[in-house]
Length: 429
Image (cartoon, rainbow, N blue to C red; front, side, top):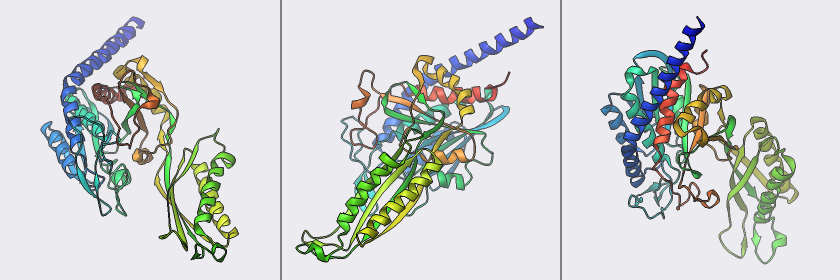
């Protein structure tokens, strides 16, 4: 009996190795297409909730593979459904499609020259966060999995999401709207996975973090109202600019003196400060705007309260008033620890065990977090930094010099495909 069980185990192990090898072969074969798709999308970027051509490009590809396609989800989103030939779970794989209002400085043949309207202004548009590579990798994954449909146990849902960077103005969009419109239902998703390229991690390398992985993102504004006066007689005023600067400085003490950053990091950044129209007039009002990043929901609530108290009391002490508004944009991106433990071997098959490692949490935010409210989620990073480059000098995301090496994007394809085949068997004895 023991011999039979050993032979069955050996057979299963060999089958898994053969499947992983087949995935690697197919991913390598589709890599030239993945690179071509990525560069086409890079040259033709579109802003959040305006990804009309990108969506059409994706939908046409999925239909060519015989995949069931739904368009117009959350405005411009595309969802593909691939039903395997065997019963099994429903897994969702997600890629975001939108670009940013950034002027590209990188001198590549596929450099973006696109402009578009953003909040009433004409702006340059660039894929400055790697979403073009996310879309291309998921298109490549769809290509490989469609060719292996007879071996798939369950259903794969391909989610091509608009507006990860945030919809413009007061529009709805992004993952919250995708979830609201039922992307995690019909059929119900059992687990959801996402990849993000990184310009500061060596190409072909995968990094991940169980539990809280990326911060929540809250946007805040503080409207300070004082008393105007001539600039030559400041004693007749309640200067909202002075009050605003005192508030900015005091907000940093919430991070440095009031928050237990050993427990989890906290970031408070004021990115905009508007006040006044003339150099010799003390204005009546000042407006501060910024972002809050936390990795713990309890700390998030505590920081919000401290910001309100700090701003209003400083203003009150100066004879001014301060009105604080905080808008919750994204949740903490939380990787289900049990799911991570089960699926790390799939990542190791994709990149090699020596190229998969854990990472520290990230104070950047991702609206992928909303999918995690509906099913266990796992979001991990794939490196795109040219080998030999110093990560400390790598151009950052959301900058004009952002650059990735796309020669190893097949690692992302392999990661998604191995996850699809390994998940139904993960954790089973």
